[in-house]
Length: 151
Image 1 (spheres, rainbow, N blue to C red):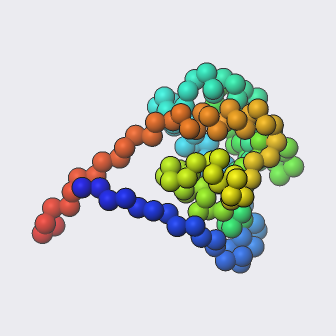
Image 2 (tube, rainbow, N blue to C red):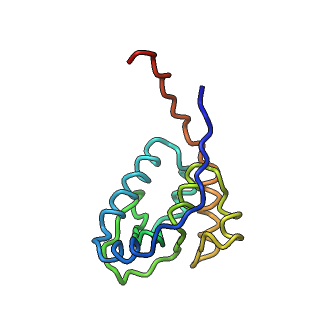
Image 3 (cartoon, rainbow, N blue to C red):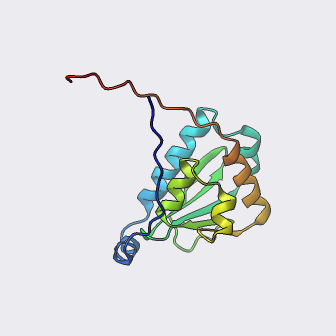
């Protein structure tokens, strides 16, 4: 029997962001594009929406960790961008808890945006396309076997 888990709203201490901004940011971009490319290969991201992302660049900022990922979609693949001065067509900024709530589908982007917990800057049409694409994703349900007594 699965139990629901609610991700609380939280903000990490500012020292975390101060330290996080001093660390290399490329691992964040590599991790994110790896996940996005896997989702695309598994068919979780609609091909027609992906085609509309061609040549566009993105930045995701996790404010309370100081981390950010810069990436683009080029030639049908998400690719990391390593230049700090690379301008992005679309920027998403939020604290870690807001991004976790989005992933868990506990909150939708509109609610977080209107509650000022999610900032979206840049190309409005592109932002709407990405939002609708992510809303349409049917995340698979992960099933874990129940724990056997005595193990």
